Image (tube, rainbow, N blue to C red; front, side, top):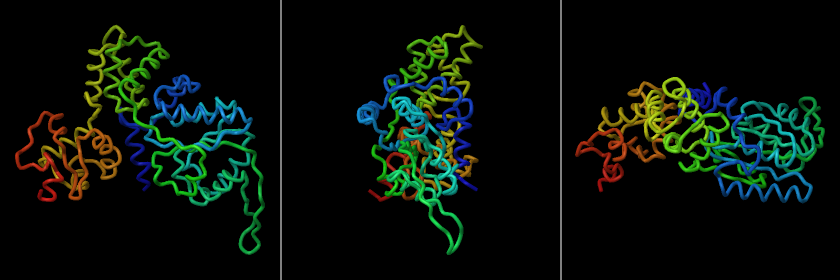
Length: 356
């Protein structure tokens, strides 16, 4: 079983999951900004990328290869399309898991036009033979196609037109250094601040013809986990509630009521997140507890808890990973309105672990 596929599917089923389902993909296509001027957030990345693209246009050359890393839903695909638009070039979109053999990659590369942008999503999941072929293609715009088998096999060099590769990854650490070093420009996408998400929500509401007040946008932004994709998804669900239960106008009260129906609390935690925290606090006194034990208590797979729920809980300071297991922080007790026992390690897990 491929656990990456399992956890991706689980994340896509959650309202606050960062992965995109078909509905998200369709809506995102309509909401995507068309150029860097429309793109909200990621100020440093935008500024640096703008310089790279302007310089390439001034030279009349193709842009350097670009590597974008960061969590899902932050705009990597959108930026790849903007790169193509800014360079006036067509774009070809594929993904690492779809390229299982070097021949798959050779077929794609040999059909590229001069200056075309190739967007390779989840590039870290590409097969090793294809990855090694990509080294030469990126550096020399050439690939060697192997014809025949055994001692009679022959390598035929195939020249490629200059192109720009835009690679996207959620796990930059899994990329081998030889591949990472061949990118002329690398950027890490950061999570968004609530004020930036409010701008995203107002822009999306305008495009969706939804009337939203400032306090309603702020309420949705605060529960969007720093991710534009989640913000747009929550906006659509709140819009549905406002149209059915109210007059169609989204304000703070409507947003709070709608997101209560969908079990997304004030910090953006959903049923799975709260289930993990409640099991940790109520069943194990705040920990430390092993991941497998915690997963059994929640009724989920170990990988689901580790890959889907824990990253956000750790980032929010509600859970800590220690050598002895998972430990709840004081913020977790406060968020669920519970009082930690005096003997709990939750107050300072590291102190109890080392006897300080």
